Length: 265
Image (tube, rainbow, N blue to C red; front, side):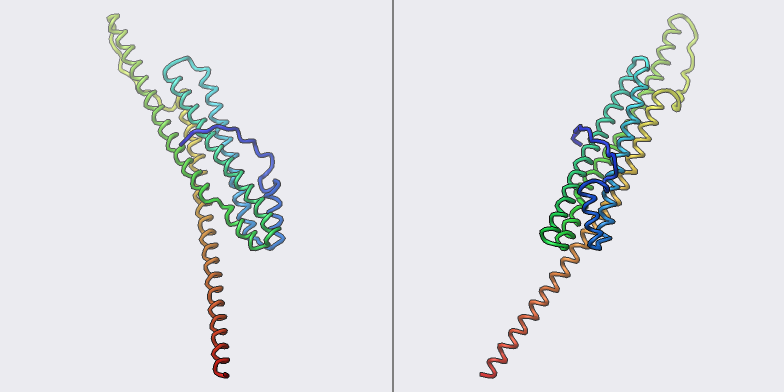
């Protein structure tokens, strides 16, 4: 996943209450389009939820990075700090993608209001169907999954490196004892649930779990959007069929009249 970094402004009020989204929701209510209104609200709330939860993940990663800063300089500290920084960059990239998705969603809302003013209710319904932005949801879901797998690998790698260093320290200690004519000691097992490395792994796991929940939510929304788009295509197909039937009936009527005229002649 290509890494981009940008700061997305914190949402001070729910997206559904902002500018063009609010205007669109009021218009949909006036036109009795309750189902479409519900669809727009669900998408707006989803975007708010993504921004908020990704912001929380970034805050948690920032806190553990501060705690790592007070650790004694070591190879494991450097690896842990780099691991957290990479995780931060991945989450910032996700926020960038959500920001782009949000901008497209707001733009579609503006287009929907304009379409109604220029062409009426049917044009409004058509643009609202396009606001589900299925392709954008697919991109976000794919990115979420990639980040989740990456964090899982980081957790395992931190544990492996901590274990390797623990064993290496034990061997080094025994080599020092041998040099001084002392008995070597059995290398004790490392307690994997204590220390700064464990805290780093714990935060990464919490972040991974949050991103997994966002991935599930995105998948559910994408499936809903696909169903709505399929329903829209089906409705369009039915309209086309009815129009075709009407045209055929009209042609038959014209043909019948021509035959009647010919018979009279």
